Image (tube, rainbow, N blue to C red):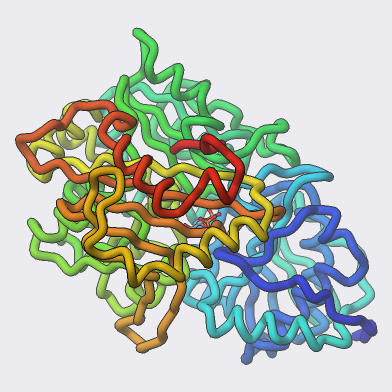
Length: 539
Ligand code: G16
């Protein structure tokens, strides 16, 4: 029944910020996906008879890899696989499914906001029993295993019909094809005041970017909340996302931005990414940065039923602006600053130390699951708009008047040769000790370090998580290399300036950050190292 297939290691299977992401053509090599999935199973205990959740964002290769994963899971002794219909589960819905099914873990097949299709990107991520991305101890063990693997296990069985709900047997294992949306939508109805949102009579535009949230948004926004048909745009998941980047930022979701800046804009606009964990929030004539969205959601979360008892704490990734810190301070809550990557929030959420988490990379979420959650953020915003009876713009202005404003932007230099990007970071790290006290582009450097994090729950330490340059007066620039790209390197430069309440709260971000942009280049030699004179994407 169980068949052992001999293999040799692929040496490039180190998981990045969020799982293994490579070009589809890399995943199509013999034994590539098989080696990685078997390596996951080789490093986790408790498989016999256990439940495994499998789902993905519907991109090219999703169905093919799911069929392989089912057979490998059967051969490795799992008792049950729960898979979303059509192979579809958004990342937060997969996290929820793992939790409610008390699964040992889950395989989430996605390359997130990266483009899809035969020549684009694919990815596999393993999530643990709490529903969250595997922590570094697991991904380190997994990577080590990929370097020594010499066989993978499978069973001989036909493909499962992924489009028909119900149960079938594969080897000695049950495969259950489930509705991808129902359990997730029920959770959202528990957390948010659906009747109040319905009664508010808001108008909105939601761009699902031809990615996984289409079915979720259509069911929740149009069917359950009564938004007009057509509120959800690009609502059918496509294997190539219609040829677009399913990345909800002002560059890739510019049509939504134009809709929201038009004279007849609806009240609220939002978009989400390939696998449904990121979100973009734009009110009528008011874009809200992800860092500000985290702060504003945290400040108002108590207006939603799921958070009426208040928050236990707030967590943000290091490059995310300090806007949330001011909310935490005012509410008397602990604030946690973690490295980039949602996996770092899991322990804080499990320990009940934080309720809401967020990142500058357009991710916000809470302890309802262990992933960031795009549709959740949209619904919390809608609940707040309904409860306050005010516009996004009014809420933002009120927030800044109370807490001050963190002007913020991220500059991305994409597809930089890895050697050049590494040289830039190495040079920067080499001079950190000499920077404090010096003045660059009119800004005096107060502190400079390479961010390290000690997890307060288990004491584990993560080093080299990004270079921080802190200027006197509270401005800062952060440099790090992306951990989610599939070719070359992406340099991310995060720029932030704080203006206290009562100061300049409605100025253009470019203008407010101009001196920090100049200082960033002077300090890191961006133009010299990358030979680029301007970033590819500004968010
Ligand atoms: C992933 C992680 C996020 C993280 C982001 C950063 O997002 O899940 O927690 O903030 O990567 O990406 P980078 O390393 O490129 O800056 P996603 O949405 O791609 O899964």
